[in-house]
Amino acid sequence: MVVAERYGEGHRILLTGGAGFVGSHLADALIARGARVVVIDNFLTGSKDNVAHLREHPRFTLIEADVTEPLPAHEALAARFDAIMHFASPASPTDFASLPVEILRVGSVATLQLLERAVADGARFIQASTSEAYGDPLVHPQPETYWGNVNPIGIRSVYDEAKRFSEAAVMGYHRGRGADVGIVRIFNTYGERMRPDDGRAIPTFISQALRGEPITVHGTGTQTRSITYVSDLVRGILLLLDSTDTGPVNCGTEHEMTMLELAESIVRLSDSTSRVALVARTADDPERRRPDLTKARELLGYEPVVGPEEGLARTIAYFRGR
Ligand code: NAD
Image (cartoon, rainbow, N blue to C red; front, top):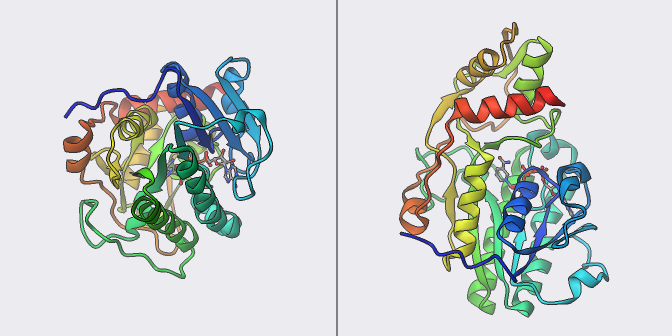
């Protein structure tokens, strides 16, 4: 399946969360395609620094605003958008504890408001969902047809359920209001512009390795994740944008590794003297995670190309430079 590039030159794209890790890379890719990109971000977990290089670009606008509030009066928001991409949301496990209400609101109130705007504009709406929608999965690897295993009142539920609500809202607006929508279920993604202190495993391990501190692996370290380098994710998201499919579609890699293997790779690739220290496991932490990519391949022709060695080496170089 080859998906033709539909969104690029001459198109106006509204991107929420565009000053975050994934959003800023998406903004770069959309600008490179010739699109006009309007980012709304309140810098809750992102930073102006992530898009500082785009500040003077004639096709880029950054608006500081909270997307759970009505959109502000701003000339860049007046004209219709061709696509709206909702990527705003804190996404790290530490955020689940410190920003529960913010996460619930950005996944519910903001999603509904942005869907209304998408219907009014006749814009394609892309929702950033997550592998967390599968919770602690009882099916492995996870196909999109699996409904998940989520504890609705657990510590992670504010994030998991907000994203599940977003997915329901997106499909509700699609069926009830004719919205043109696409849902991407993103698996653990890493790369440049992650915050070193954001609580996710890869930036934490790299920061610890570069400081020569113990690498704090949760539990026994046998739990697995499939890690995706950000350029592979961005390509998958753009394929979904260009398609006419609703999804949901998984985006990630099938290369599954244990947390111990991940920690050891990072120590080796960063020439660190750090040793692994096992610490208490957080509640409801999923045991295994790996996307079934059949649908992404068949629907979008998606194929990840950056392996963990290469992606981790680039990310380590970025953190070292900071
Ligand atoms: P991030 O925290 O770096 O980016 C999120 C951005 O959203 C930040 O810039 C933040 O300031 C902004 N934001 C949050 N609430 C906002 C609000 N109310 N108004 C305006 N802006 C707001 O996280 P990320 O890893 O880049 O994640 C981006 C999206 O991808 C999120 O929706 C996340 O749930 C999803 N996702 C990411 C991963 C991953 O591995 N990185 C995995 C699954 C899903």
